[in-house]
Amino acid sequence: MNNSDKLKEDILYQFLNPEKIEKTPQGFTEKLLNRIQFENVSSVGTKWDYKNIKVPLISGLVIVTLIISALLLPSTDKNSILFSELNSLKNISIAFPDNIFKNLTSFVVPGWTIYIPIGIFVLAAFDKALSTFFNRERN
Amino acid sequence: MRQRESMDYKGDIFYIEKILSGEQNAFTCLVNRHKDHVYNLALRICGNSEDAEEVAQDAFVKAYRSLPQFKMKSSFATWLYRIAYNTSISHVRQRKKVPLSLDDFPADMADFVGINSNEEDAEEEYNSALVNFALQKISEEERGIIGLYYFEELNTEEIALITRISKSNVKVKLFRARQKMIEIIEKVKKKNLLYHEQFR
Image: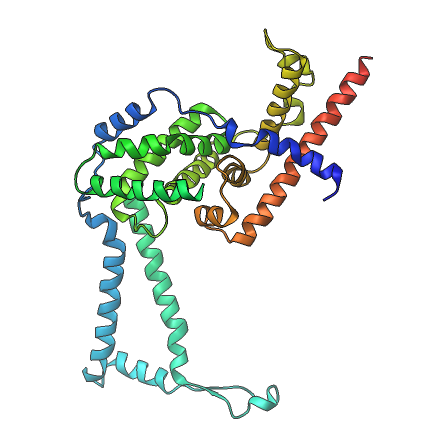
């Protein structure tokens, strides 16, 4: 920093210093305490409010339901359309063409990867539905 | 200053525990201890005393409501500053004002001469007003950082904790804010010089 810059900075140090600190307007504390009493703001032992946790609660419940359904699925009727569709998805394997990826000819993407985009789609739709529902409720 | 802060820290915890155990009057002590600092931070960011008072009040109400969630990982002052900083920034963003133009600053130093003040006092008043004008021309985030650094004398590490940006980013923002302010001051001075030359 050259001398000219230092001189320019001096003006900031001169006028931006703790001595220039200002006092709060008179009656600030009283006004604040009155407001706290008037608004009946609770600090200690804040009441448990289900609204604060309803989004994570519903999300958690849906996820647990999905996991339980997924676990129970193999034991259900194997002739059902849903099971046969899922089974056919399970057997899908994606292979890259030889002529494009010479070095990757032996690489086969596992069949379960097909669940990833489906999962993302389901969760995105679920998220959108939840946010629409709660935003409407808030407004 | 470190020693004073450390004593304050112990004192704050003492009052916080009292409040949490039901002695709500202890909150008055916390307010009295920190109100000037919170108000000044809000004043630097908001730019006027009415908004600053409103924001400082809101910050204390939020702090009171959230006291059970205060984990005591940082000092109470840092935690309170964070609330005040965020409240001030949101307040300014909600009430987006028309940006100040260089012409908004008076060209004549005579405007700063009070009834009893001499030329020297007028010059000091002029420079002080100019620095405050430059402060209002930079972004609200930069004003907050400048306020915490110069007025509250916090170091970049403490500012990083309050603003939740990295220490290196605080340094960069501080440097840029200073540069911007100096540029604005230079421009206003140049403009005023041209104005005076016109009337010679």
